[in-house]
Length: 152
Image 1 (spheres, rainbow, N blue to C red):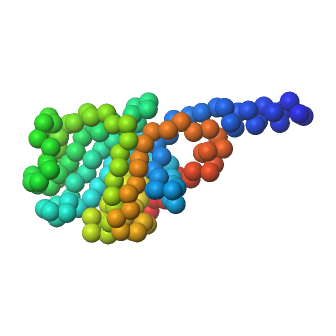
Image 2 (image 1 turned 90 degrees about the vertical axis):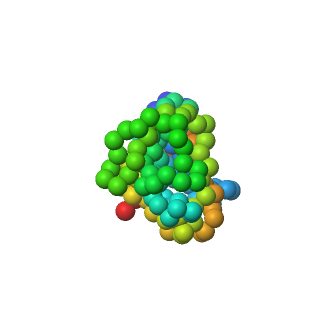
């Protein structure tokens, strides 16, 4: 019995699996994202929708592609053109990042899209909250403590 309890505790602490974690400063809010997700928001200048598509690759986030409704301020121009949803222009990017910092507000109408659904993060957090999204390795206890991001 003691050996079985020790085994359960050891697995819970030492068995680690990859995850993508979203956190606000001081961990006021945190949740787990799917390994493949998209950030979608309305650009502050052009008022057009942008979408960036990410996948977790080990300890990096890979920005695989972007979809934008129009070109303007801050539009990357070095990507390879790819097919995109109706009304968007697509670019292949393939840029590896250690961490992603994103400021959300009601004006930008930010949301996170994954196979789990849509998470309207701009409605969940106060205006101008900075969130950090980064790969992590979590043990079983951390997976219980850090719930999946709420999806609609």
